Length: 521
Image (cartoon, rainbow, N blue to C red):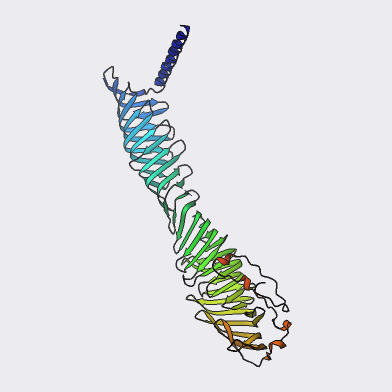
């Protein structure tokens, strides 16, 4: 019996506490009439009042209108004409019609709706404002104005306490610098930073940007673009996993899987990091950088530690490509390595600097500096300056060699056809008959000579003056006289395909003439 009484007591106590809490809640959420003229009071039970020019107060917010129906029993309002909700010192909501529920603190505003929060204004025809969460939203289309940023969308959620707006469906943001079209956008009204959360197109005066994730700071003109990021600047396209761009500085950088394409000059440069200076007219590529120049049939693949492309800022097309440190290139007809390299689009000229090595067929060409004149996908001439050297293999321990001060090589149908040697010309050449039988070794020196090449091999040599030397039987030529000064067989360094340009090679010291070398060394 005593236990039953204890249970009943607790039930009564809990019920009393609950009723007290309900009373407190009811008292806390009651809408107060602070001013206004009552026109009608219909039914004491219903407690329905009609007021003219009333002012209501509810938990710190003030509600104004021309007239209103106040439902005291349900603690709700229907307001008409010049509706205004003053939610804080900075937040005001306007419209023609308002339904407000004092229990849920939810306001529904219709027709000519305008929400003003400091420098930000939202306009629409239908808005729901939840005072509990501080979230205002529309779903039938609206417009946001913040400074010189104007944004339209189908849907919007405004988190007034965080000053964050989420826009969805047909989002268009415009300002004097850009026009942005996207599916989803988050906007901070204080920092004026836009966050892109879906497919986004950003059009500037002279650029086009696309991404599926990113952000744009209106104050600093800085932007970040990720997921299928693309920058189009007239004739150039730049893509990468992440793009960063500063419109004020005309500077951008890209990270991972970066690709720049020039559609006019038919050049594509790839790498995992790039810096782009539009105002200065150049772009740098590093981290597995490779440039591809020419058409699909005769593409030249160029790799170096750093690639730099300079472009004409007026015509917006690439002028030249520079390769710094450990430059290596591959094309079907020619391959080469050098410390650095320069490619000029104006005259289709490739210049190789510091211990360059060039391979054409079975011939290895070296000099202090090498220039390659190309055109229409073909090699026309090769210029070799200072200590020019041509080597081709006769056997595993025998090499045909031509050495001189300067050389000019002439090409026909992308194949080396003849070579002029000017100054201090020297040869070590293994002469064979039609049956490939070794006739002797031609060792000669003169001032000028011309070499004729057939099927990538030296066919004959013509001397323009009387050379010193002669042809000797193979047995009469000692080993220490079979290699000219400066001989250096670099066949193992030769790029064999487009992937091989990434192989790291070191330029070895000069191989002593008394040590013939095999290809395997």
